[in-house]
Amino acid sequence: MIDDTPLLDHGDLDLESAERVTYRIEQGFRYDYDAPVESVRQRLVVVPPARHGDVHRRAHRVEVTGAPVRRQVRRDAAGNTIVRVHAARVESSVEFRVAAIVERVRGDGPPTLPESALTDQRLLRATRLTAPDDRLRELATSLRHGADGLALAERICVAVHSAVTYEWGVTTVETTAAEALAGGRGVCQDNAHLMLALCHLVGLPARYVSGHLLGQGGTHAWVEVLVPGDGAAVAVPFDPCHGRRADAGYVTVATGRDYADVAPTSGTYVGSSGGRLTTSRQVGVIAVAA
Image (cartoon, rainbow, N blue to C red; front, side, top):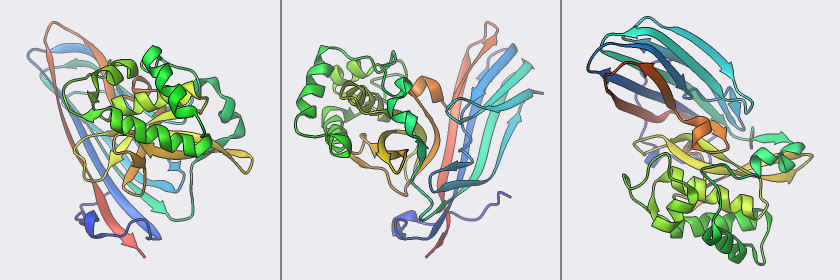
């Protein structure tokens, strides 16, 4: 059940020491059209996983208003929940809303994958958005010296944070890691792509994470680096946008090779009308147990 329990002021809470932390996620995407459009097909990656390390999904719902729709829900190869929606016709607007309750249980983490993930080429090979250029290769070489494993991942995280100044509106979802490094400005997804590119160059398996950061206005992105641990691959989260490891203020929604794998909303429609997207988001803590 998803209720309207007031959000707590997470700034006054010791989330790291709590035995249990319960979060509520509410997110909406509204498309407005100047004239009726047809065959609207939307792909939503907005539902948190049933479990991601110490975080468990307790309840969720996805609502669509504005048009009759058919929907299909499935899990992709990475275990992400993919909601596909088809509306034969939308007169003027359609809105997609997700609400979820997730609970972090201390001691239930971290996320693990089969040991084979350490050599999985999908987590080691560059994508279009993380493809290296000469400058990236030079930076990777300089960072690799004298470090490996998590120490090297820490070094890369700090270097990326120093290399890219946060500035909204100067990059797009099509901006590559090489372009972000050259420009020196960008947002969280640019930092994540740059860290992924460097991890791949030094042989660290890593993946893109889409999710939420408490206190931030929009969807956030960070990186999980995989390291060996007790016959498994352990996912260790780093946020290069803030130059630190992720903690209890972060809630994962999906993982992939880059942003294109896990874009929260994407789709197509048939019609000459232009579409305008309006988003909303509220994520916070509703309960803490010491």
